[in-house]
Every structure is written in C-alpha cells, then in structure tokens.
Image (cartoon, rainbow, N blue to C red):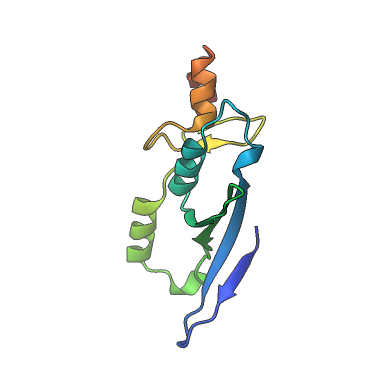
Length: 121
C-alpha cells in the first residue's frame, strides 16, 4: 500500500493509505460484514460503499517517529496500543489478534472442524 498526504492548512500533514474491496468477488460462503469488521479491527475506516458493492477504506499511515524524539512516555503509549497477532495462517498470511469477533478466515477453519490452535503464533 502507498501512503498519500492530505494537505492541511497547518504544518501537520496526515498521510492515508487506501484499500479497495470488491464484495462481489467474495465466495458465497464468506460474509461481507465479517470482512468489513475484520478490516475495522485492523484500523481501516469505511469511506464509501458504491452501488456495485465495491468498498473503499482508508487508515492513517503508521509512521515511525525519529529515534531522537522518542520519550519513555511514547514507548509506554505504544506498548498499550499495540495489539499482537495471536493467530496466523502461514499459507495466506491472514492474522487475527484474538480480540473482538473471530476473524472470518479462522472461523471458517474452525467450522470445517480444524483445530485453530495450530494457527496460534
């Protein structure tokens, strides 16, 4: 993904990355609401849903501050807000933090009778 700056009148410029999801391209067994919820858990915000079932999402780019400007308070804030991955599919790269509703990809595996513990990181 690429980050694109949004020009503001002040000196601060927010940079956004964008994602497009074609909901018609999903398999019939997948739930588009689950997919959008999963995206929300990853920090994506729905911008618009077009009549042709294409969803556009955005999230603020996560830039690392300069090393010299970090304080202990910054590190503490970051450790509280950072959510670690608890489950990962090595084949697809899909992840779930274990927070909120179970990720659709992992729920499908569980419903198919797989032991989800084999995906635990």
